Length: 402
Image (cartoon, rainbow, N blue to C red; front, top):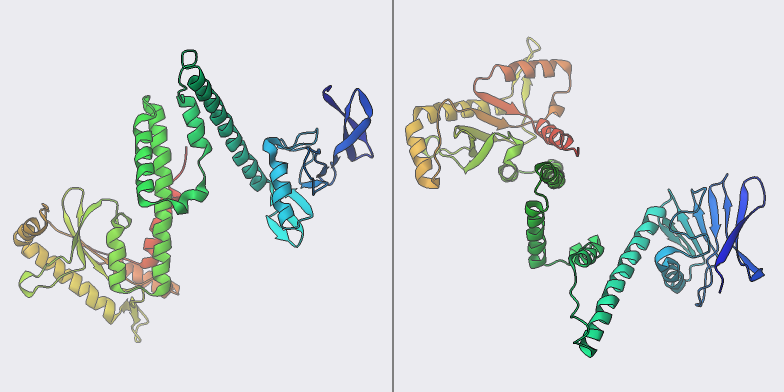
């Protein structure tokens, strides 16, 4: 059979037909697709392949030329049409559209696939086809080795073929079916990939940065999600304490260790929420109040705002913690060393209080007075919950790929 040829017939200014024909049988020709460049729409007529064809055409929207997945002689690469044809016929679909910008939908007997979704199907089928070719080649080589062992060596799957099989089988849809041992094995593989892939420092650094960026991005997204859920649900002080202990780096990246329920009044057994130890081994004190904690109250006579009774009580208590921590620094240091085996320096510690939100500062006067009151505190920092959330989001913005 001679090779098929194509010719273009222009039906109007914007509409052209592409016809396939055989030189030996010029009368036996057919239209494989029709293109309307003005509307950016193509009607693609699949070539009969020896099996029942239920769809006489595929409408392709958003293109003024045939996409690469479609061949002008009437077939789709990787055998995509066969599977579309048979699968969609099961659901009595009558029309298929591939749209560059449209959504995926299935309405009555009409099916539309976004072009990227269509590409994904084609890529997966191509990967299976490639894998099948490798398997067939190996099976044939093994067959001849078994029949004629003196003539044909036992086949060995080379590394290039292994890579094709590994990468070709990557499919996000299997993630939900992975067991704990499967996940551990994949993480171990990823660790070895990072360690062993490159020797040149510039390539190694790019790989490390890329991996870190992706992991950090996922981690911070999860942290933000949990933070917003706690805000929405009105989490208790205990809930916030557990959350912040897990996400210590959000408070300040210099902190590297948490000491739970730190006893700073010793004899009276008074405990703060927890202590924080920085990279140099210095201890700070951390106290948590709820986002709903009132920050300010108004002086009716002078129109100024001052700390609310609840905020005042928290600040005074934190100052007492600092006083006792410094006064009994050596005892506190020894207790921490004995109980958790960690050396700390208790020298002019700071107290950090998380309480309230910016929403409470709903006028200019409140904002100004709050700023003055906060700046007047010595060795004590007040962080509002929405300020903390903004810090996290700023960290996310710093994540970028070169």
